[in-house]
Amino acid sequence: MNLDRTPAAPHRGPAGTAVQRQRVGVSAQHDVYNAAVLAYALVQQAGARPLLATEAATMVSELGMNIVKYAGRGSLTLSVADDPQRYLEVLAVDDGPGIADLALALSERYSSQGTLGLGLPGVRRMSDEFECRSQPGAGTTVRARRYFEARPASPHPHAAAAAMPQAPWAPAAQPAWRHALAKRPCFGEHVSGDGALAQAVAGGFLFGVLDVLGHGPQAHALARHCERWLAANAHADLIGTVEALHHETRGSLGLALTLALADPEVGSLVTVGVGNTRLFRLGGPGICVEAQPGIVGGLNMPRLRPVRLQIQPDDRLVLVTDGISERLDAQVLMPLRGLDVQPLAQRLLREHGKDHDDATCLVLRCLA
Image (cartoon, rainbow, N blue to C red):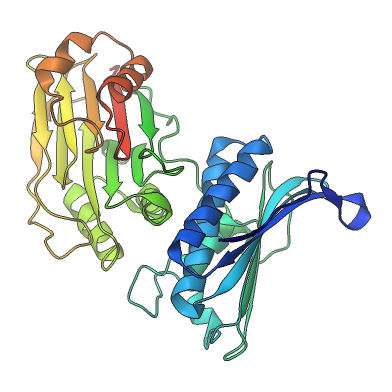
């Protein structure tokens, strides 16, 4: 990786703006990984919220992989500044073949290589300011800026579309449930390819976990896309939701997934799952529901078979990805059912999480 280190004292930009800037030469996937790690560290060191550091790494990863896939060589310049609001700016430059149809390349799910096409559309969604210039045969330049604090008012035509939705696992306006999420990336990685969802929908409370195949920035980018897609599109028809997500992610790395819809008013829960994810019910006799073999977005998507369970007030529901040990079973979990959601999620991650895999544990408590 070609890295120009910033001087110890940040230089002054226009109007006295303090700027910390580092440039990364990009010609291979490991350069992109290093750049994503650098972006994460810069944003963390600037004191921004952890979610912003994750978004910064995702933006850099997407722009860097576009350079590797389509141009072969280029550079990423990462700048942290205060102008007057703090922000991260990513400048991606290459001398490749350029983009023949920029409008098409910025459309959702487009890719000239048959993949998800999350690169430019995904970066634009995560950016507060976004600019892309490209000419066939003359290379491509992309500038993306993400503010650390509340976004300033902007006449940017994509400002509304670029706004990130609330994190899918944030507390939902549903008094029947409490929930908590504990997760960590694979050892040596700074971002995770796991994801989670918990939100009220028509017909009940919908929640789930997902695990993109592989690790690192590419898996992380797809996991964040799936979280956003589910937050916007998931509904009470679980089979229809999973099949639509399968269509959305065809040709991608693929993922494992468990979704569940609970209606505590009638004491019922229905769940479907594909891949190495599991759901535990801690109440009455403890139950573990294993997902069906297969890969969402892959060639071996199974015919989905829902599983129905009864739930009672004060039951705990635990959903885990395969980064949580396979030795964990309902008998091990039942003595812990008296713990509240956050202590239980943290304990399971600490005691049963694998170091060599992304690990996620979502715990819910039925209050009604």
